Image (cartoon, helix red, strand yellow):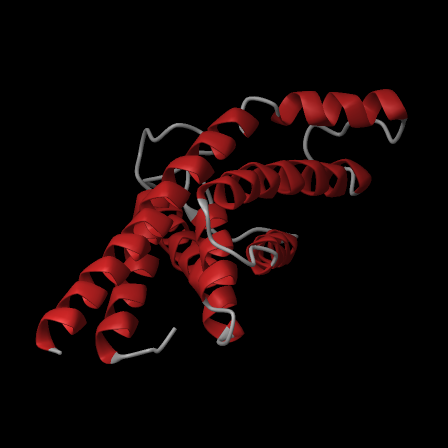
Amino acid sequence: MKLSKSVIVSLVLLIVVAALYRVMPNRPLGFAPQYAMAIFGGAIFINNKKWAFTLPILSLFISDAVYQLLYAKGLSATPGFYEGQWQNYLLIGALTFIGFLIKNVKFSSVVLASIASPTAYFLVSNFIVWAGGGGLQRPLTWPGLVMCYTDALPFYPNSVYATLVFSAVLFGGYYMAQKMTLKTVKEHA
């Protein structure tokens, strides 16, 4: 994808809107666009991997900064920055690799990636929480790991739904923009 001025402006707007959406009060738990942004970035920015990783990570950072500002002002119970946060950024960035696996952008590959990303995140992030003794201090036993995954189950369905919805918006919007650009080029030829 060529990064024209309008494409860069669109990407910056996408990052900011997604970041602000993530800090919206009363949104369903786990329903956020960052996993879909990672998949989209990996699939679309094959020749510009820096943008592929920048999309979800910068959006996540901006939303965390807003959360921290609201927390510092006493307007939110959720802190934006916390110990071990780097693991979250690493995991979100790693989801971009699932987007790199999409060699041919089509409905089935986007749906599969949209289910694989939140599933991988769920499994790895909750294992890290359990192994680090975080969360609800579950014991470092097999039953403790199962309890840790069970604790996180309320977030999982919404993360899958959100990734499916936001992937449809991102990939669908990209497809429509390509069609409109192609139509315009043909009309001016």
